[in-house]
Length: 442
Image 1: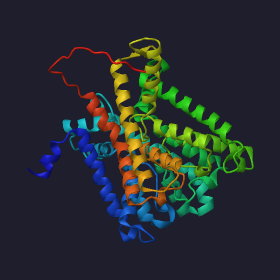
Image 2: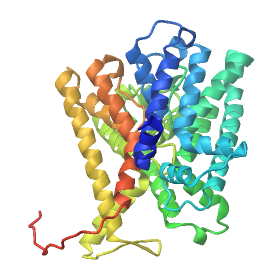
Image 3: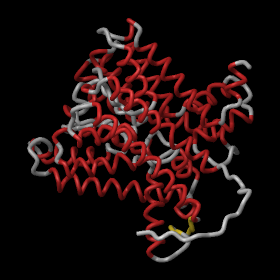
Image 4: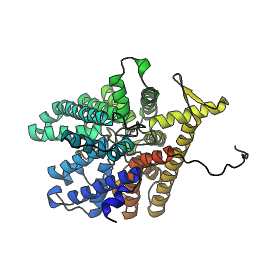
């Protein structure tokens, strides 16, 4: 049996994982080329960086700005774009623009990658996503140029603007500056352009298309409403918590001299755990309570069918609704005039269980093979799982085992929800019906 036949027999999520893995390996080879680097990097460095780029995480073991040439940085931009927008989405748009027919198998593949229930209108949605992403990144690059061009000159300034715009919209978190965006905490152009980009990218393409098509709020789908309310609530919670917990911390907010800088930092640090990965303050200087809050936000992540990772905002929302339904002794969950069935609650519990197991397994292996602070390890693992990219400074201290674990968690964090969703959506009829039993809980 040929390789093509073997691949054609794989389930769609498994084939999707193979495609992503292929791009990671190709990216590793490209980043290891002498033309890609200014210094000699190891195969481990190249693999870790490629994995981080394709999974749009942003964790780095080398300095992106100084250790990679423009060619290497261009490779990273391509990997980030493919990983963020979706490999199949990109391929479908390119092939359809060339007049090639997109078959049922490719449509099914695209449906799984975008997390949709139906294959109707997929090509139109994929084309819309491509145009929307391109427009947002161009606008972002233009705005960032007003800050970077005067500082670096036309050539380097435009390059910086393009790189950070692509990285921001795709929630990648890669920066060409060694301290990420800490040097620009006083620049409203950089702080708000980048933050708005990764917030929009993290909403999800289904939400964006729904907002474009719907003429009235009443026409918005339940998913869109949950995403908008959940996103607004998480941002407000993050801003209030970060301001209250870090205001007197000399290593973060108290170290800033002006009120506008503090407000910029509060806003940016509250929204960046939504899997963006950029930081305008020293993450390692945060208090432990702020660190725990950030971990929760990283695990929740952004929206389904988006450039963000995590268990997703809607998953957290449904989990809360299921809890409320339990205390009301109700068999259904209700929100915005819609009911959500018990099956959705069971899917949420399955996703949460797998996520918690993955996080704890990663924490156990790294703590067993490293002499690192436990809080730093937990932060690193959760950042990898949520494909966030924030770090408390231990990424470079990981040995080969630690790097392998973080790479695997980044991969699972990007591919896992798609694969799990496929199996949860696949229903099997039981051959034998067993009598119902009772289990004492609590």
